[in-house]
Length: 135
Image (cartoon, rainbow, N blue to C red):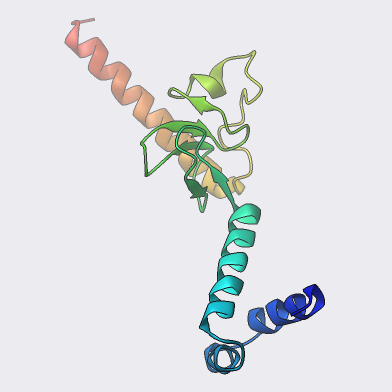
């Protein structure tokens, strides 16, 4: 197959339903279709995911703030700059490139919900800290 034929096959596969994909597999073979699927998966991940800076696993952000937790290695990183971080100070330190951007990119309604949740979490921890020291 020429590169032009492969591009046409990829487009045909992307725009086909399950039945049509089965017909393409019969026509071109299972191995060729697996190669096409692998290519499309890689293309999707490159366009819609980032790699964890610690373990290099692909991470896709579907909702929430920009502080990410890798499910593979449990490390924290910033979705915006892709640097490994420790807690929220990355978003609260003035000299950080992501200062004030914890909720950047969220829709306003969702951002307000998350800001309120973070504020409540912080207040609960402050209150617990104060109670432990009888302040």
